[in-house]
Amino acid sequence: MVNFISLTFLSLILFFFGGWLIPITDPTEAVYVLTAKEMLAAGDWLSPRIYGDFWYDKPIMFYWELLAAYKIFGVNEFAARFFPAIFATLGLFVTYFFATKLYNQKIGLAAAAILATSLEYWYIAHAVITDMTLLVMFALTLMSFYRGYRAGNPKFYLMAFAASGVAVLTKGPIGFFLPGLIILIFLAWQGDLRHLRELFQLKNLLMFAAIISIWYLPMTLIHGAEFLENFLGVHNFLRATVSEYPKTDVWYYYLLISAIGFFPWTLAILPAIKNLRGVPKFDVPEKFLIVWAATVIIFFQLCATKYITYTLPAMIPVVILMARYFVGRWKILMGVVGATLIIYPLILFFTALPLTEDNSARREAELILPLLDNKTVVVSHGKEYSGSLVFYTNKKIYRLETKENFEKIRPQKMTWTSKNVMPFMMFDELPADKKIVAVVSVDYEKNFLDNAAGKWELIGEVECGKLESLAEKIFIGRERQELKSKIFRREI
Image (cartoon, rainbow, N blue to C red; front, side):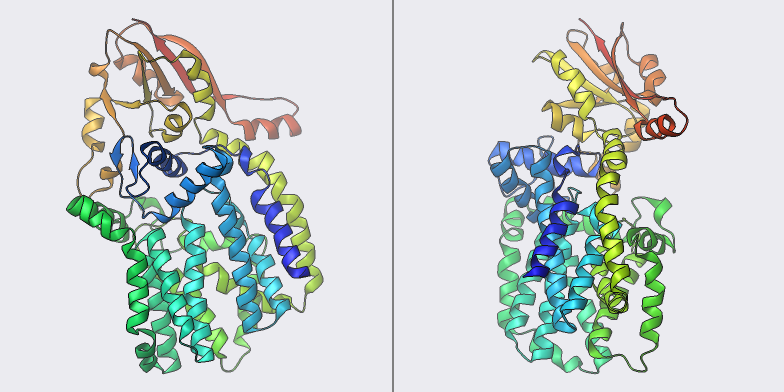
């Protein structure tokens, strides 16, 4: 009971506290919250849609979470961040119970505490993305398999296939393929591949099929080839084979992410590995945890597109192995955990909030909302289109482009430009008979004024660099502000 209360307390402080203050950021969070918002307005809980068009980026599970939170709390930041925090809490408890089954309660508590206070886990617990839900369902799949395998109880396999089905509803085929690959490698190491026949029983496969059919079957029947091409083709096959962000496609990417993501525990990873090397022959639990972590990291390293969050499922086996190292260093463990309960709220207020404000259009929305009526056209011009501006204004906002640039980024099948489903407008299409409000990134101001015909009035500016300004104010005694965007208006 004491451990349960301790983990709940950690979750409330680290995952829930202050979440309602964090604005919705661009580009990823805005896409999720805006999609769910449009689904709610349409009364359609089946087909994701954004900017008035159907959207096949991710499966339905996370959108259902957002829709449920919207229904309970309203459409706001707290609702958007509620279920990531809930699943982060569930992640702690499944880690605690699994590590307790593998070893003992002390290792279970240490593993959950290390997980809760790792920087990447703390960050994703606040992020409006699918990854925390995937982590929990991914973990439940593998934990259920292992429990069934070790106990000789096939009922756990049914649970494993059910959890895998929900993982596929969360992120796609990877929710089945990658846990399956981990199980296959583990059984091969055990010299027990014959056990696959017990795992892939008909009832287990039917359970999996029944769960994924809840969404995939009606989507295929309703949207047909367009759904399959975009969901499986662009957002799964293309993601694995063509890097969306080529600069991150380097061999050391996940080594760097792991070093940062496990802060403040990073320096303990090597001693924990050295502790494992002292074992002449790995026990079955260590084999399973090693295969789980290594397979996730290697698999995503081989994929072309790399994201910070992709290797999150590897954190659970790693923290369990690290917990074995820290059970003999309990005072150090508790001291670091206690320090993070002070440090992370400070990071939230003094670092995360300024950074998220600069990656959100919430302040721009507050400036332009009093200027808008049904006859006003709103456009935005900059490097990226701001979905958060649409979310906060609840207005149709056109991405203003030159014809030359539009040809480079216009949607084309089986390319990353197919994600550009927002409404576009060329400079020469700006209506002469309507009022126009333009939100312009400061770096694009000259390009905007050179191409946009008419007399434009500067009516507002949004500052950035708050984090740098805070540091300068503290250490130098002065404050420097830089501009993020400017708001222009053109009357009829």
